[in-house]
Length: 568
Image (cartoon, rainbow, N blue to C red):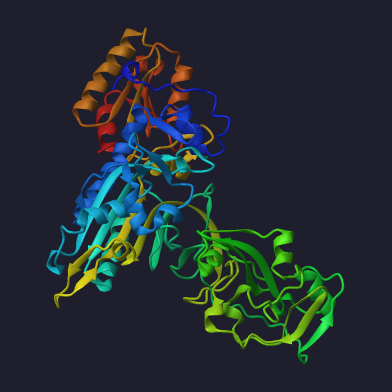
């Protein structure tokens, strides 16, 4: 490609709302253009990168035995109503009507569509397992689109769906997809971790996210410093927290605790460690058909993990309860505890507190707390993992110390079980001739998101730094002065030679000065630049490594062999 033929509108100014390097550089370097809130066009170089990522994903998916299909973006709402997600999915699902007033949605994901494809077409266990996937456009009506391609409304995704006769077969495919995804992200040259995750709106019995480690990641990842354990903070588990501080001993009693609103106030009042207190977090749970105030109890020196709490009560959303809502529920903010609650209050206790004794908790009376409280006489269903795991906690797998790092989600795999097939009456005949709902798995890769992730993983203050797997061009031949016939002719000769050798080469034959050309090279981030300038008179050219910005002088007699060896 000649730069004079390339549409690559580079700019000095970044978008005003851009805070991440990928957002700034992809726009400034002419890879994408924004045309609406969370909506982006891929320009020529952006399309090259996108296609390279797509090709790697497709090659590995095809190698795994999956079959590629193409499903429509517009989906009849009836399918979503059959699965029960039409109302449950929330405002991110864009609903629309056609001219006949039929209901449709723009698909953010395609579980319902693929179930409709398979039901009544796969009738026997002998036809299973089956894995169908696509790489296509999705739409999610993000309330607050930001971070460029990382949190847009329209995006390109690889989504795959597998169908199985039983749970064992589903788990085998789940493990195969974990291996496949590891191959994809390794080929892309990314530093990533597979982490335990929350299944969210997709649902199912288990899931793993693939997180690229990056300073600008929006997700917190818990990692063990001693073993391979890693998890999204929403799903992270730990070994039970302990302390060497001696427990306070007291007979069960109610104490007046004036002005003790916070855990620190209570701990100071009783001169104890906050480990032996309980914290009550009051939330309003929003369901499809109702709202209620729900109470969550954790240890005083722990924090509530809200996704765990939301999953515990099955709410669509959790929000802070207002002062009036707390009062109407019969609760006393600052003095709440699990003992003596109003009968109609739904509450959950962190599982680490089960059977604990010598605790101090709110007495559900203004400025009163119980001492010597025990967590004994509650139903097992009340106890559930609610705590937010923190740096310094101990690993449940090996006892090592846990740490926190940042990551960007690039893939997510799910064990769906029979959730969708049962809801949509998609069945087959098993070995005994009985009708059974399919077991399913679901597997997603953010293809367009990966374009941005490549930059988040590799950039500097000058611009992008592409690796060879995804760069638009491997080599940028910069003719310093196209008016110099010797430089231009030699550039044309090298361009043809390298192009014929299969090297992805760009000839910068623009009439611009050398300064803007080298600035564009640094901004766009091709792996290497070959500068044809004044040194050509002495028989030398200059090779620039974009990653290190190191310059190497090469004789014209050696340049062809050196470049071919470098880019072999």
